[in-house]
Image 1 (cartoon, rainbow, N blue to C red):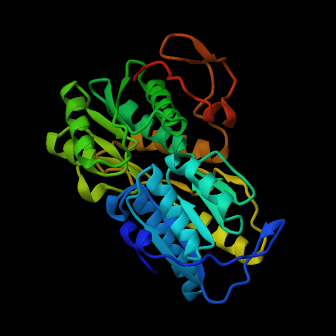
Image 2: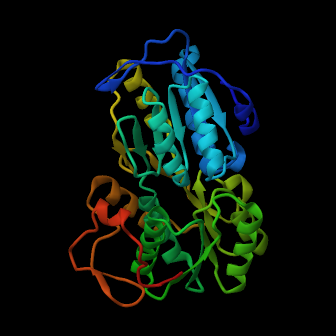
Image 3: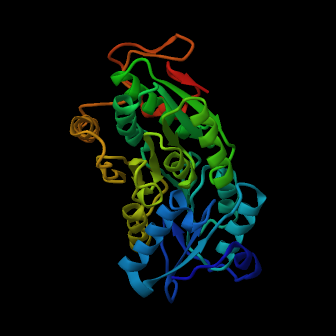
Length: 360
């Protein structure tokens, strides 16, 4: 597997190879299939980007020397992303995975310039003939974590470290809060926004501030273990890994984790491309499909609490439980979802409001 830093990608140039387009994209090139990854953080963030790095390694394990992978790290969500995407296409990469929400507009722009290159955008919503989107139902995992927090919190005060107030983050906050308050209606969830996916210093500062305000459990939709390390230092009940198992960084405070498993999607995309059957689509599996995995539970969690969390996980997996089943009030007291109704996928992606109990 080839690992090229962002600086090197911008320095190296190669002409793109033209491929036929006939309904679906297929490849007739000699040599390995070149695949590029564009990532917002470093592969050793031990969270989000690490999950995609694991998926990239799974491609190499599956296809061996039939693929050549370039994994580009720490690309900001701005014009630099456009440059990296273009360079990867010019170098002959025929599949490019862009793995952060803020890359979306640049993916669409560069894809127009390279109609014979397949682009896949993680957590995105914009598609075209050669741009597909994929995601994971992280909010399902949040409901499991919220169940744990509802049972375990002693202060009824949960601290939530958010990256950006976009729908995927908002629906996660809401799913967590609904599940926690289903167990303990007195719980409040206090959100701090960082305007960053990966900034260990900011994450640690936010964790300290939330603990100082009474939080005894921390949740994060940011990419590294800094908040968990603060939880360990301060001796609070704990927190949850995001994107990967982070227990090595906080063995006492790591309660469980939402683990992203991207390998099946990446392998399927490559198989579809090789077979000439790839078409632009949206992929959004979750717990049932094994793309969202609940990490091991800390041994200090009582057995009945683990059983309650497992019941939520299994209910989501078999379809008998939906975290967004009404009645649901927003944090201004207005009914958003009547009793018995469920927020559908379109409603989740349009979610710009918070449920009762959230302070954001």
